[in-house]
Image (cartoon, rainbow over all chains, first blue to last red; front, side, top):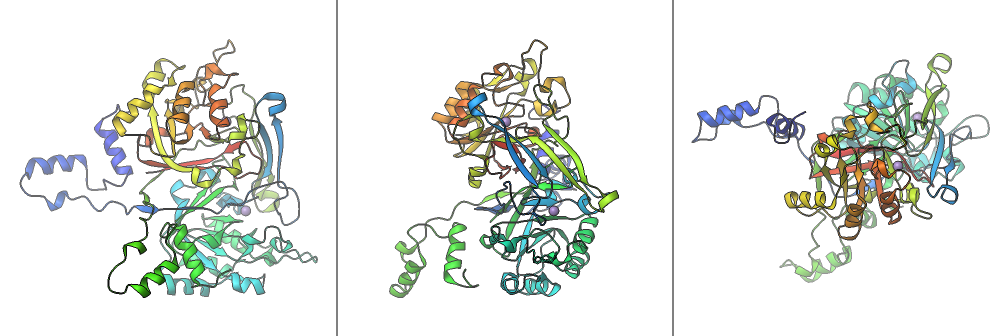
Amino acid sequence: MCPPGCLHSICQQATRRGLLKAGFSLGAIAAGASQFTATPVAAATPSAPATPKSFTDIIDLTHTLFEGFPTYDGAKWFSIEPALTWAKDKLNINRWTLMEHTGTHLDAPLHFSENGMTVDQIPITDLVVPLVVINIAARAADNPDAAVTPDDIKAWESKNGAIPEGACVAMNSGWHKLLDSPKFTGADGTGKYHTPGFHAETAQLLMNERSVKGIGVDTLSLDPGIKLGEFPVHYAWLTSGRWGVECLANLDAVPEKGAWLVVGGPKVRGGTGGPSRVLALI
Amino acid sequence: MCPPGCLHSICQQATRRGLLKAGFSLGAIAAGASQFTATPVAAATPSAPATPKSFTDIIDLTHTLFEGFPTYDGAKWFSIEPALTWAKDKLNINRWTLMEHTGTHLDAPLHFSENGMTVDQIPITDLVVPLVVINIAARAADNPDAAVTPDDIKAWESKNGAIPEGACVAMNSGWHKLLDSPKFTGADGTGKYHTPGFHAETAQLLMNERSVKGIGVDTLSLDPGIKLGEFPVHYAWLTSGRWGVECLANLDAVPEKGAWLVVGGPKVRGGTGGPSRVLALI
Ligand SMILES: [Mn+2]
Ligand SMILES: [Mn+2]
């Protein structure tokens, strides 16, 4: 390890902070300084530092998780019980038992693939990304089987420009406001479910013709509910090495363009996903 | 809900983004515009927008959580088992069982108080804060009972200026590099533990004479290990309504001043804390 002030550690920090780039080294500065003292030298000019991301406010896109958080089949996927209590122990600690895919949560590639990345293997830089919000709430209010289509993506781009490199594309279906309603699971009593999601062709478009890290939904599933048991989007998208985030909250509070999404996913060895703290920086 | 373009929703967005402040309304703009068309009017000038926070890189301060993550008494506080598997179900989901205070995790006020805030009640804006790093690694290498003292805080301030409003003050003791060593728990075989932490007087200083939201450590406990069973810092700090974060990783990778800490704590109803994704934006 470097002692404080060591050039190696200073250089490491500068590189990490985007101040130094490939082709620009402390050696080059020293050489430039010794050879050209009078005139600034173009060759020694560093490439532009990474554009800073900036924000002034923070919006929480996370639902509170509780026993009874909706699941398609009504099974309890999260439970919490006191393990140490103030009355007995003068401190409080609870024990949780949970299935990974409950609450506002991350889907890692392994969730729907044989050998995909586990949740702890997703690079952190892939979890802080530009947020694109596709609002289909008006359509979904009339039709809970509505899906984000390739035309929705193209309409967003006509208005806002190309989807940013490395973005997360999130569906705002209005379902984030229906957590307390039977509409959240959309069970129709005949074994079918009706909740909005991504059309399989949209997943293909985003995988093949755009550079997107993740997709997000404010429903229980990336796939529309009527696909339950088929999961074409889960299989295609997660197998491709990309991630998804489900049960997003509060999407009406973020702009359709310009926010940064922070997916505070669990760093659990071998995990297929799990409850996450998801924020928008705006 | 507002339709797109509605003034109410534009105003809401602008307020959220710090563009409009108390005393400055769309009404005032309209009045200003109608009464004074030639000269800009001081009274209608908005107060300065919030200073943008900016970053170019992201550092993960989270240890990977696994069965066997160190605990003081060696008990297993996290376990993971397959619930649905690729071989049988063509998808993967695990079940976790955990005690809230394991891995890199958040301590909510309720953890060491009778009626303090639960983890889901901590405002999200209190979890994205300036990061102050106090490095006592050299001293702790010689003495695992070392503590962050009021003098350490004052030395940091002499060099860097006052601790920023609303900061998290984190101890870098070097213990984040000792996860695989018996030094991480510091058990000495006689029932005592030796790990660095915050001195109780330092907690008092930060509570009473600075404006600090949280404290952080790269060890298992905010209190030095030799205090185990007493917890003066846990009781004073958490009872005051502030939070703590324990088992931080990778603290050598962040500057002692200037980073933004994002504590992606679990939003679990009634929780006393829990495994968190913790990032530094630099
Ligand atoms: Mn899922
Ligand atoms: Mn704790």
